[in-house]
Image (cartoon, rainbow, N blue to C red; front, top):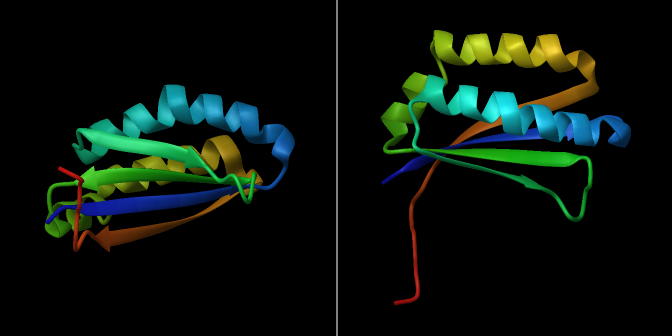
Length: 105
């Protein structure tokens, strides 16, 4: 089964949201997809907490996700994120093992 890396970011000042969204779209998401070697990723803004942004990276396996999130690739991404956003945006990262996918035929 596939695995997901979920990055939950909270933008401390909502005035930074548009700039953060633009940077993530143009720079961070493409860089992260390339560094992780994933074909699929998506982002979302919370409708209940407007400061919360989540990015989802889909890996073919839990092992692939573990490799990507413990190596130099993620370290470089973290450093660049910190350089650009410092304490303006806090985040957490979580690897999740997909246990079921369903679709209506």
